[in-house]
Image (cartoon, rainbow, N blue to C red; front, top):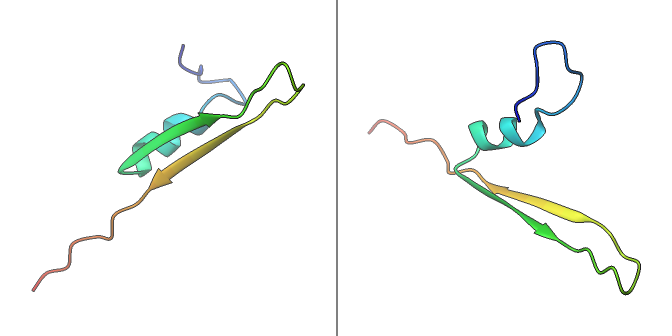
Length: 51
């Protein structure tokens, strides 16, 4: 579900996707250990230069 025009949150991963070459999420949640969390990673390729 996309963020609405008046929403104050919900655009973070959309921005990451539009600005990066690749991206993903690693979920660190371990309910048995009571651990929650995630890491979002992304790559940016350098711009091509004119030769």
